Length: 103
Image 1 (spheres, rainbow, N blue to C red):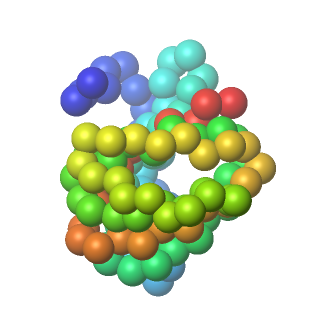
Image 2 (tube, rainbow, N blue to C red):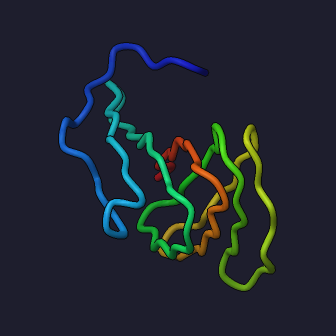
């Protein structure tokens, strides 16, 4: 899906890592939420509350989930992160992403 309809968007940006990662929250009528964002090259670690689905729209990166080896992710691919966990990212070029919160 390349476009969302009938949504509300929070105007204030979510800003992380001194502005190297930013996103905007998109709220759907059914109560679900996604964020759309950009990550600049660098190394980052994120914590999760809810289970997440990260869709990589463009970019080049590696991900490491807890207890797993690093793996390469490219544009058009996605990965899931368990609730109450963390994950590490190595971003090699500007990465555009959509994060869906699954519960």
